[in-house]
Amino acid sequence: MYENQLEIIRQSKEKEYALRHDLKNHLYLLSEYEKNGKSEEVLSYIEKMDQFMTVNEEFVNTGNEQVDIILNYMLKRIKETGAELDVKVNIPKTEFCSAFDLNVLLTNLLENAMEALEKCSEKFFKLIIELDRGILHIRIKNSFDGKVKKEGNRYITRNRNL
Image 1 (cartoon, helix red, strand yellow):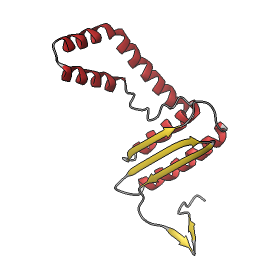
Image 2 (tube, rainbow, N blue to C red):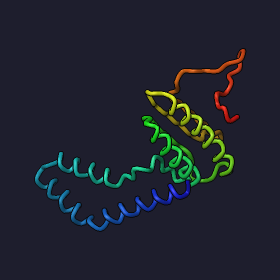
Image 3 (cartoon, rainbow, N blue to C red):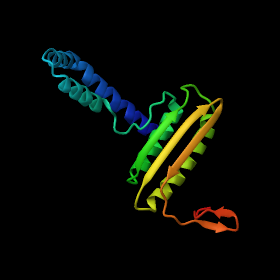
Image 4 (cartoon, one colour):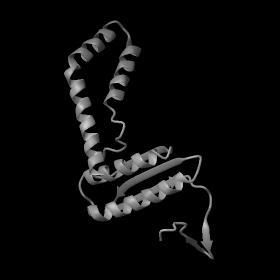
């Protein structure tokens, strides 16, 4: 997970350096577009600059290093299943629970979702994480193959490794 996050940081720094290096030229072109009343070109050019700065491997950037590392690694793996991702994370930058507990909780939840996604053809994944008044809310919604194992009123895992 840390290697993945270091690669994201490296890519981000490279793109930042490249944009900064050519910033005068970008600003000159944007001002010329504006002087000539080409507002559509200004917006299009700004959108291209934004796309250039986007790091493909970074799904979240909350400022909370432990959460970013876990989520970017796991969301990359989930995306590799072919799932459409819908992710919203609103948490403080400061540590709000132990990194160990957070790692166990998030990786288990996300690995379960990933296993379910691998078994179905239409794939969607939605994740919402927020901290509200000291309570961590995690909502995950994902597609699965529709098969459920049940004994009475209890749901039973289909995982053979348990």
